[in-house]
Length: 220
Image (tube, rainbow, N blue to C red; front, top):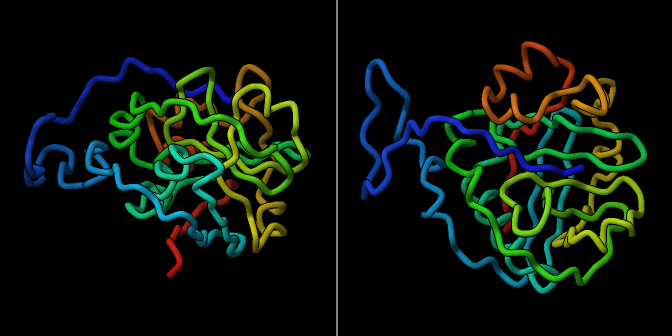
């Protein structure tokens, strides 16, 4: 259900550079720090909050690192680096959950798709408002996260480890556009493989009503 994408995309980024090269006139901008996942390994504070400003309003996620340390660290680094800024909220299933976390830039997605996390033990249940990383099996968490719309205890036994919960703006989360439904093969909504391969260009062209994350900021 939360299958991460595994596409054989050509690598357009040269690894091993101490500093990113300047943008070429006829090529991609390699100065984007998000193209270098190895830089984002900072340990998160014991607790922190991330405010998401979206096209429907703001919501705040409070993270408790003790719940799922590896997931909390990854989320902290992604939010701090601006990974979610400008991303679309592409999978909204009424009465179940809302998912986002594929970057609008396909070059960024190509660099993160294999940066998987070792699984955290599930210490908390997937209750309404709680956030977990999406995954398609053991050791497959990367950047995609979801927020539960209801209590989903069946996800606990499948390894989905909550690391935080919405403490403000759950009404905003409830209001995200869900008219496109699930993606293939269950529906005709956004196809996650294409989201990863083409980013916002694909979503904006074929699913223009999707809500978007304008900015995600770690609160002081």
